[in-house]
Amino acid sequence: NAGVTQTPKFRILKIGQSMTLQCAQDMNHNYMYWYRQDPGMGLKLIYYSVGAGITDKGEVPNGYNVSRSTTEDFPLRLELAAPSQTSVYFCASSYEHSNQPQHFGDGTRLSIL
Amino acid sequence: RKEVEQDPGPFNVPEGATVAFNCTYSNSASQSFFWYRQDCRKEPKLLMSVYSSGNEDGRFTAQLNRASQYISLLIRDSKLSDSATYLCAVSPNNAGNMLTFGGGTRLMVKP
Image 1 (tube, rainbow over the protein chains, first blue to last red):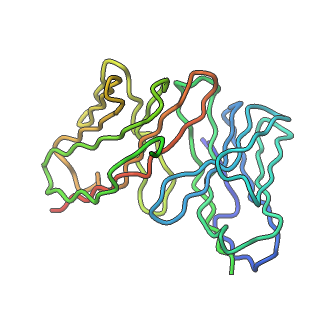
Image 2: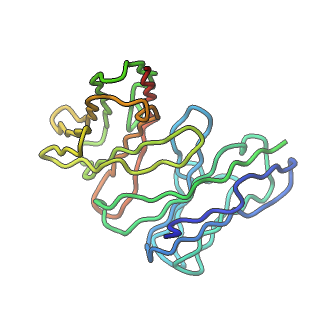
């Protein structure tokens, strides 16, 4: 039962570097999401996707990009890392109906120095 | 006003106590409601969905008050292992599955 798998679990980047956070799910969920969670705060939606080839902005999309070429994968890209992007990033997936809960990966802890 | 608000706590309670948290939401058209549990430095995990008529799962009871626009979580007979942050999540409409999360309420159960 893999569920939602995120890689890497930890990463330290220098300002201006780029990287891709990987997310894969094996539950055949149409919907996938990327959140960030700053210390002591709630989850903020960065981007989401309702199916392969379809993505849309969430609450805090600036500085990030996503793609959804397959149902299973939903990578999140940081092009020019900034200290403000230091956070814990969670990927989640769900079925499309609003009464279905979201299932989360175990997160990527990212520090930008 | 935030879309979904929770008292951040912490709620410090002794083992065996009953504790309740509320979560208020601003969008009266909200359709689906959930409680998640998040342990320190871990991912949120679904605790329970909240149904209109209220629902119970063991020591946990969730209720919805649409008139006053809040949901609640009651934990009876608190255990040390209940110590965590409890996040409420609200789906603003039934066209899809977007969730807005509250900031979480921290619970600490003491021996």
